[in-house]
Length: 466
Image 1 (cartoon, helix red, strand yellow):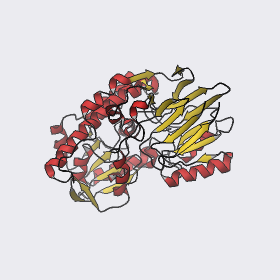
Image 2 (cartoon, helix red, strand yellow; image 1 turned 135 degrees about the vertical axis):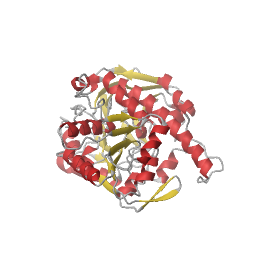
Image 3 (tube, one colour; image 1 turned 60 degrees about the vertical axis):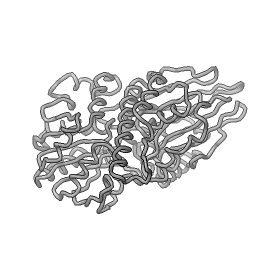
Image 4 (cartoon, helix red, strand yellow; image 1 turned 30 degrees about the vertical axis):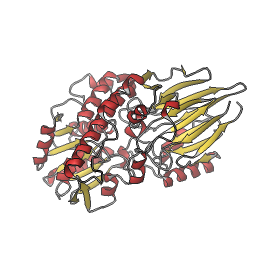
């Protein structure tokens, strides 16, 4: 049996994760994500898929984030009919995220048509809510550490990756006529000292490893994160401003709520109202109760006073009217809204109103890929284009990198140290060029690993005649 892989995304960029594996005629797509960030990347979402979706037998998802799952509605619409295998929390999260993404696509197309800032005469959504719903019947749940046979030659086992609720490291065992090989997809690895999620599982063996490298070129300080956040919020409060936190609805929002609750209880921040303005984040937060065995926050959720998702300072805003009312606040407030990269969603109207205010603060708490609005703001752009209008950036801009959901360089190396034997090949994926190449060099020097930074649409033969 021959085994090969083609990189349809997640190569040279942190988004658009899609890896097409072919083993003995069986085609398996690991992740099916949207490209985000730079325009050249985003345009790939509109291209025909590089291989006929109807020829793909199965999709495996490492986790639910849109850059790993967001292409599924278009993929199914273009002809894919197989199973989409993922963990139980990922299945529930995918439903929430894809419906929200479809809704945003429809709203943005209508808004562009109304305002006339699209070059297209009739702007269309990439996919609709109805397209998103067509994915749901194909979703198949699995549990951590339970082996699932995909066919007579291939089996799958998922292990905890940290990162977000239900995120998985995937191990594929491929049994040929002569040998058995193991292929490991790290997915996105989480932090080793996450206050909510368990650390990534240790994997001892892998013949081929696909390793994420988002922070392959840097370390993120994980000490005193709460104090950094508290200092920014206190200063903004004393200046009479509002703290605005663009946050990913899955994972970062829940961590921010955890820290804010603890900071308030310990007296590090004033008794400030917290507004969670994201229907999707509200729905996601509810899943933490349902899947309490996937994290270590369970006991706190049973006690109202200790529950970071349910206390008197926290206000959940679902409807659009309530969301718009937050524009009138001039101080004494913390607003959390999605998306975390400021690429769409309700955060845009908050940025539209907050960026021109010198007393307000915008606090980024997650990785901002090249080309995203969030990255441009962090890089110091004085003008931010929102809804086709140039908005002056006068607010105080902050970035707390230790709150990212991704393992940093030190933690990625720590995860690799658990391999008992060297992989035949390690592909550095899901990272910008500099980050991937830096980590590749370290793994070569430290462990003598054979590391490769693949390019978009590049193919490799992994095994021959196994």
